[in-house]
Image 1 (cartoon, rainbow, N blue to C red):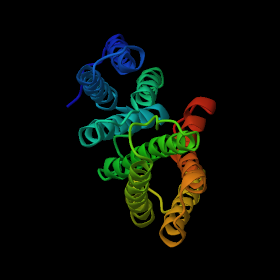
Image 2: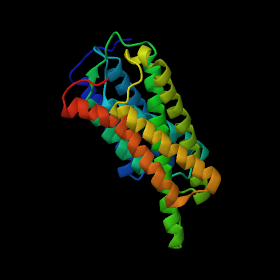
Image 3: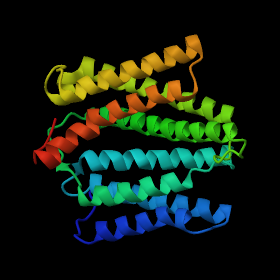
Length: 264
């Protein structure tokens, strides 16, 4: 499916999506209305991604990767609020969603090569999915630290969820993201030539990806062996997420914006 090209349609769609994301944060809406706004934003966001990724020509870049990541985060949030209605992360999601869709519209990325391997989209999907899960883990870790701080101050937790629940959810998402990141790296190692036309090379993207994988491995091992929690665990999570962000989004940003050319 190739979507028709129009110079104004993506801007209109991006603006509507950004507004839909922003409404739950700036307006005091009932819970049902707030969830409906998030769902509408998610649907519009998906349509915008389809427009950009399946257009003529199809494009993908650092902003598109961020946009897909936030779209996945919104999907996870929608599911989580069904299981944990008291979860309060709408403001953070609104800011990330509105920013991501506008950034992806302004920087649509480089045209994709028609000669690329048919397996490349799957490889990207694994990597972006791990981005999304680690982003959700970071959001939960921030809520966890906030709840921990408020408990020390004898105040009500601001997240809407108990501290132990937030901690358990954080590490579940870290574990799932780690599994997908491992699969992504293994695919690149074993099928690099088929995916990118060359065998495994130690590029900036590869180095940052492996470093992030090592940090997450240490975090999960420390959690299992020594029961790491709180700021000790959060620092490693933030470090690993930062390295992973530099691995793909950071490297593509440098190539596309600073150097002005396509990256591998």
